[in-house]
Length: 418
Image (cartoon, rainbow, N blue to C red; front, top):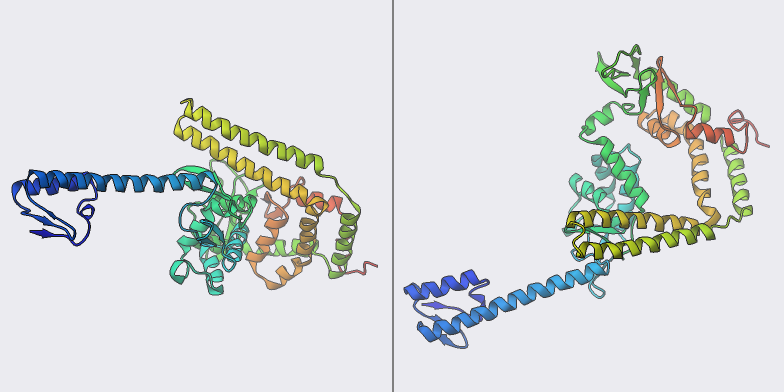
């Protein structure tokens, strides 16, 4: 005899289980069933009533499941993340949305900023951020894999993926899409390289060979690090250069472009005057961007109709929708930049001048990692030829020096600007 202290719908959660119970009653394995509110006899009428009870149970479960899916679809249509909030956000029980976790959101932004620079490994980021109080669920410190998951999650710039489809979130983003894209590029370039190799050969991946255009690699020989052309599938005559010699060249270059405090102050004052005097009108550009955003909204709406008509597969629909949403996000960020008006150019310019002011300190520290970081911030496409490191003449840094408001600012690093 079997007893149950709950309702009969607890006996079977699906039709298969219900059929098994009735089959066991037929064979006499189960003699009788008793419930708190009634007794079910093992006869034709009793088994008929039991099958009705099981059918009601199945209906209740199916209806509940359908209501849950309907609720999730409604949330997705409104751009609301339908699951537990990721690290950096909290679930708001009142609004059923996710909101910023004021304590952890700044740490999330800092993680993206550190990684986007390209000179911090996941382990280094974990070591820097965890001691500041960064924890996950149940207040446990984050692992390296959790940081990697964070860096790959588009939800932090306002877009999220659910069951293969991308949605435009209505939650407040922590970072911009530009910052997210920079991190993905750093992650892509690192690929499957071991992080120990990245820290061991500091300047590997920074330069190309000036003779054949191949990448410059590094190797350890007799206690010294040498940089050379990979010479892959080509006959290249370039020779090795020791890391100490290369570091000396970099140090000399950094000292050459650095700015004294007095010249830094003068240039920043000039930039501030330009900012205050220039009233650049961005209204037409902003209106153009807003019009493009509306066009994308119309395309997304039309895309749904095309998919429903069967002209697109589900995979094609999801891919096109993701491309439209990301383009819309980029245009919206550009519109916000235009809305900032004439101040949008000032911060990058001031940061660049301030960076040059800190250049000498990078040399004094003697840290090759920080010197490489400085080089990557002021230029790209570095060339190594005849054991010499060179900038290409078309580089952004060279153009900046050419168009600088003070032609003699480099020669006057240690002079009086007055």
